[in-house]
Length: 198
Image (cartoon, rainbow, N blue to C red; front, side):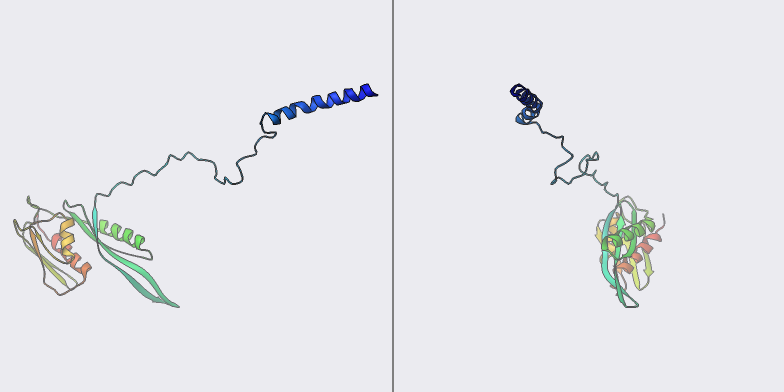
């Protein structure tokens, strides 16, 4: 009986020794079942890092007005934003646009798209001036433009950014109306530039 007990003990030791040896060596007894509990990140999907830089537009822009407007509906008022923008490449192309939306960034995007649709090309002289005197009227705004060699750009209100972004210098602009509406003044300037002859 004693011999049988000794044999059973040696068999038990032999079967338990490899597991004990593996735990003593520091190896995990079971394979890991995934990420730790604190690490909740999903698998990496091949991200390369930062986004590529956005290409700069060929057109410069200038905001004339930004205002909050309201319309009355059943149950109250709905507010939105109205933005007027002038864009141009300073090489003879210029446009004026208007955009309305519930968010300012959306309104600016709409105004920019509208200005690109309404863009005109101006015939400039060698010294970046206009060829002859022109005048135009839009709503209550009346504008006259005349070439002035060597004087640079003399203009006020929203007519100045229209001429600047169109690349026009050596020109004098005069507002003959008392209108303070910047959008109408800018559109009057655009109408005057449209009437230029090649």
